[in-house]
Image (cartoon, rainbow over all chains, first blue to last red; front, top):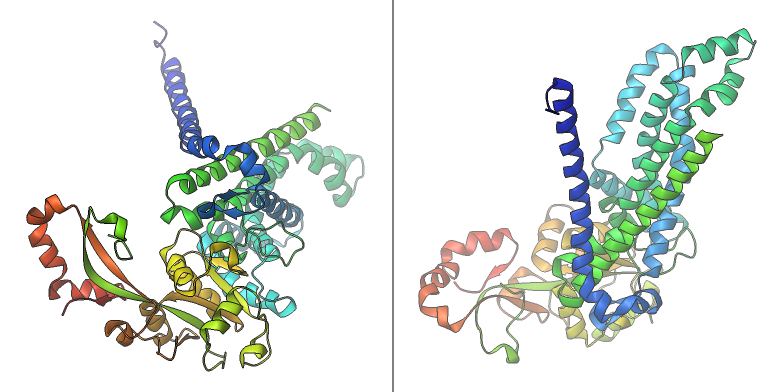
Length: 284
Length: 193
């Protein structure tokens, strides 16, 4: 009997759980593809890639500007949130006075748990009017990048902290024995040793950034166009679905599932690339 | 339930009007433009006029706030001003009425359009927006009620003719004064006294 020991029964249970989770993911993917199929058939991939604009009620289905906007927005957010998030983790663990450490951790956790609509609302009533002083109307790509980077920075911090704490104490003692300063121990020993975990944190943050809907919807203006600067209004794929799904019918509805499919594929490509980069580095 | 009347080719169904909803143009409270003509509204929404100075306001760039595609407010607005979806040169696209009101409240140069009842409630609650009249008629729930406000739509309950007898009780209830509180809660105007 293969389920004789408690351990093998436990392993069996875990296996069932893993199969359930991955098959749900697969079913979602199949469902989205199935719902998108009518539009792919009627409009064709060419339509989605080469139509000049997005007017789904007028037979025009160009998705590319939204794909590009999604990509630019999340890359921008990661460029801001990545360094800041890692720096925050390093500061709290190695430089902060001890009375700051606990409240600081609570602050980061609070920010990580902040509902995105709240951040979006703050963006709309505080951030957007500030940006509007530079370049009206203020609802823009840069507003989206700022709100999203604020949202994902805590993820980077929390993941980096656990990666840094996982670095063996012996690395610190060894570096100290070699006479290295705190600064050069960090740069040359600890950060390289923790890079896998830090990369995973940034990847998680990127996935959250690209999937973020409500906050982005509230601050980016949602005009379907190629972003041509930080102040241009953009619509990302997630906002497109949220904005139009409620009243969409027929090909319009199916076309929104195509945006969902495009989003899924974009996230998949990003994860694969990031996993490959992390894998290469770890093998060095 | 549909937020328009039945069209002529839908004569295989029967509609019962329950309530009316007006669509009103909203501006930021600080915007002092007294009124806009039909021509001026069309020019603003198609991007021919881009500064408030050109339509009798204080100088400042106009931000056109449009509704997302598929929304019936957009359809009604386009039909009333005889425009197509591609004609609108929007700066911001919004989803529901609340988002439209918040967007306009946060931007002194913005112009948008939302359900009159919701806008009236919000401006009464201190949100810095104001409703703009249309063709000389003030955009108020009162004027939607007596039918003088031009940009309004009926909210219609739709049934199949075969179900008429069976559903009579329900339809009578839906059109009775007992439903008024529910309709008013959604900021609509009951069609029946």
